[in-house]
Amino acid sequence: MARENRVPHAMLFCGPTGSGKMALAIAFACHLLPDSPLLKKLQHPDLHFTYPTIKLPSMGAEHQPVSDDFAAEWNQMVTQDPYFTMDQWMTAMGAANQQAIITGAESDELSRKLSLKSSQGGYKVSIIWLPERMNQTSANKLLKLLEEPPQQTVFIMVSEAPEQLLDTIRSRTQRIDIRPIDTEAIKQALIHQRGLEEADANRIARLSNGSWQNALSTLDAANENNQFLDYYKMLMRLAYTRNIRDLKKWSENIAALGREKQKRMLSYFNRQVRENFMNNFGIEELNYMTIEESEFSKKFSRFINEANVVEISELLTKAERDIGQNANAKVVFFDLALQMIVLLIRK
Image 1 (spheres, helix red, strand yellow):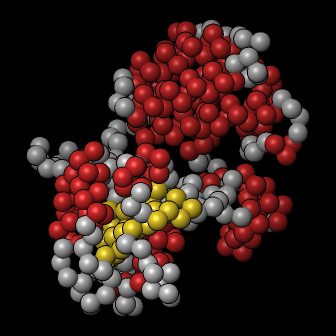
Image 2: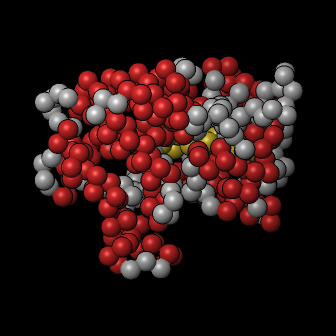
Image 3: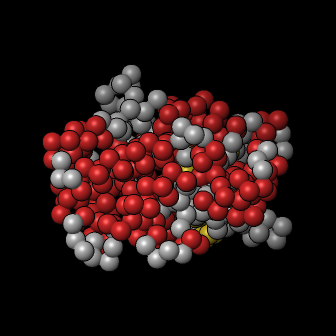
């Protein structure tokens, strides 16, 4: 597109976590902008990043967080490695129990920046990470920018849930789908960059499901999914034995986690339900589980069957949606636990 001078004013890079969307967006932005030492540090005056933020206790009551409030943390993270997760970003911001969003004030600030002339007479590039996290005010203001874009401005939106964007925003972008990374490419990267033996690299690459982040997290014995597996096993065991008192304790412990982590945990639970159901067919190629997950599944998978798999999956999806809408976490997770008792006894 750049070679043929037909770069659209707005692009939507879509794909799963770990597929390299942000790495591609940054590489393309750097290709469009004149080379300079500042560009190598991703601090070029014509390169603008927009990303979800949180409100810190130190911020004033009337202050709406904007990307510039966390510019130092963002630059440090994105220059170290363009493959990163929302969890890593939340940690970098010092988040507790908040949900990160893109505010209306951020769209105002972006409009102000893009109204300025290009510092070197070329493109101005706006990279918007996870635009699906814009609130309604922000989305409407961005739509106006897309309808009447400043001269020589290119918007690159990097999304993992494009269906959550306004139809009017999607219709004004050129969508580019980024596929999961090839398993062989991940395997070779693990061998050459991380020094793994071929057999280990092959196993981890297969489990990664096309995500470089998943591959790296599998290398970490203390990764988040190990904690989620413990929570999953505890829920299922307590639900099966109908231990309501300990299920209440379980729900209270889970409620103490941040909402972003709760949503990731519920997504992990849903994946385990799928893997346990598929394990009943006895076809190894259909399963994508770690050794620890597989050990639990050997005895447990028979309890996830045709009679309950759909309803359990829907229950977890609904809980994830409720948490995302700021429902009372203790109520959501205790209700989930009680309903799980009923679903697990179905045959």
